[in-house]
Length: 359
Image (cartoon, rainbow, N blue to C red; front, side):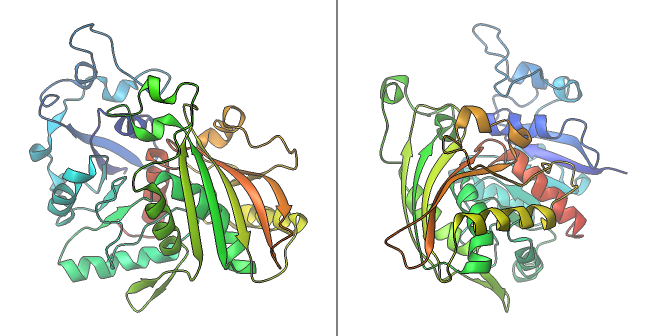
């Protein structure tokens, strides 16, 4: 029997990604959906219909899945957690804290919000990277006297950096990391988003609070679980985050000073090894290859990489030695902010947590 799941924030861009990612899912069945009061009581198709033009505002490509077209959108207050096994949430951070707290008392939550990311008993989970930290969810339940838990994803820019850093850090160590991101405009959302006048023919060299999130979250994701809390990785990380006129996908330029000697051939072999033993292999939403490694110096490119592995593969290229490091590399990466970095990554997280018996 499939696990019954709900989606809160179902009409927004990320909510629509959840709808698509859960279409015909072999393990999960969407039985309850909710959004703001203006959508409550409407059939899903009507809830995403523009009231002035009548146009269906479906933003994720393809067609609206049949399973949800006639499903009634509930108010958040009308979600019944007693009839759910898992709840996916995609709501504004300002509202997320109260809503996640309310529902976690009764049901496990996987969230794209940052509301709980920095709590001591809350792991920031990336499926395939730090699955062992999922054991902290049991401590979280006990500490807070909840039946459920909150498992947040990281910021989507953190996702690509942490995924590519994990093998390097584990085998070669890391002292210092410098990263510059070139982030797609979809990462800012549709509302308020980025205005066309600001982003056309332009690069915006600052994204509020983004750099601090990436630095803090990457250390936490790569940290170790010890006695009921996560000890952050002892790495100096400096991030510069920019917005570029690319629709979907985040490209990042990374410099890593390692503790042990490494060259591009070592890196290629390392990612190939990790592809063979990655924990999410075989799960319904997992890509065939978790990592794609390019020796072509013109890769990665957002237009060419964003559909690799249906948006779930992280692509690495331009791997070179850094002459002013005793040991270390520089590389470029591409990660899909709306797939692996958001809803589909959250569904994959749900799959690995289900496999681990967390709900």
